[in-house]
Image 1: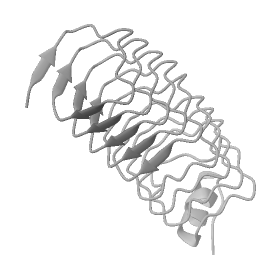
Image 2: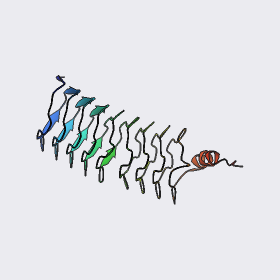
Image 3: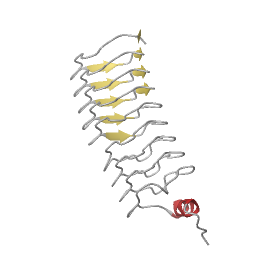
Length: 196
């Protein structure tokens, strides 16, 4: 696997290209276009993708560890079995993005508009969803252990079968949110209530 370090690809056009394998560490992709591209098995470590365009991009089995995506556009992108652990999507455009499996541990989704996103089965332990719009999202079977949901909008979201242990829901906006009995007991305890 070819490894590239400290390179500057800012403004480069990778649109409609296919990138297979390779590793990039501490590289800059500011304003680069990956629109309608396909990336498979590529590893990005501590890279900066500020204002990069990933619209309609297919990302499969890729790793983005400790990367920054401020102002990046992921409209209608598909992330399949990708790992974004420790990355920041603060200020990124994520509407219409598809997440199929993968790890999003300690990812910053703060303030992101993620409404109607299907997060079923993803591992988002420790992720920060503060102020994010998660209305109508599906989290069935997801790992949300220790997530930050302060002022997140979870109206009409489906949390059933998700692991919400060590996740504080009391400051999230809940309304017609679907939860299971185990989660109801956790929420009741957080609100100072006793069940039974």
